[in-house]
View 1 (tube, rainbow, N blue to C red):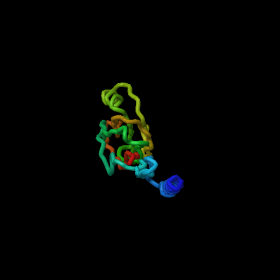
View 2 (view 1 turned 180 degrees about the horizontal axis):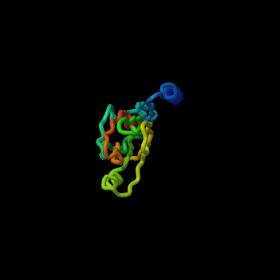
View 3 (view 1 turned 135 degrees about the vertical axis):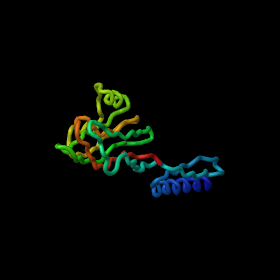
View 4 (view 1 turned 120 degrees about the horizontal axis):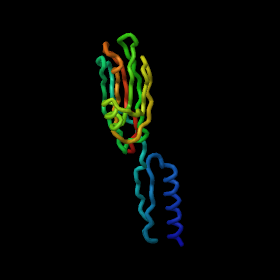
Length: 167
C-alpha cells in the first residue's frame, strides 16, 4: 500500500512538472514495473522560426527591350513562404517597369514569347509592394522592360523570400 501511495505521489509530481514547465518541451512518463516507478524523458517540441532569403537588394539596371531575372526555390521544408518587398523604377518617359513571379514552366513560355501565367504581375507601374504566397517549386522573379525599345530603367528594390522553419 505504501508503494502505491509513493507511485501516485510521483505521478502527481511529474504531471505537475509537465504542466508547469511545458514551454518548448514535452515531458513523457515511461511506465516501469511497480518496483521501479518509471523514467522521465524530455523531448523537444518543434517550434516555427522565421527566416528570410534576400532575392534582390539595391539598384538594378534593366536594359531597353530587355529583362532581369532572379531564380529561386521554395522547398517543402519552408513553412508559409511569402515573397515580399517593394520596387521603384526610374528612367524613360514613364519611370515604369513590369515585375512578374513565374514558375519555371511559365517563365520558359514567357521568355519565348508564348502565353504564360504569373503568380505575381505588377502591371506597368512606377512603384509597388509585393506580398505573394507560394507553394514549393522553382520560381523566377522577373523585372521586364521589353515594352521600352529605347530606354533602360533603374529599379531600386528590396525583395525577400520569407518563411518559417521547424526547429
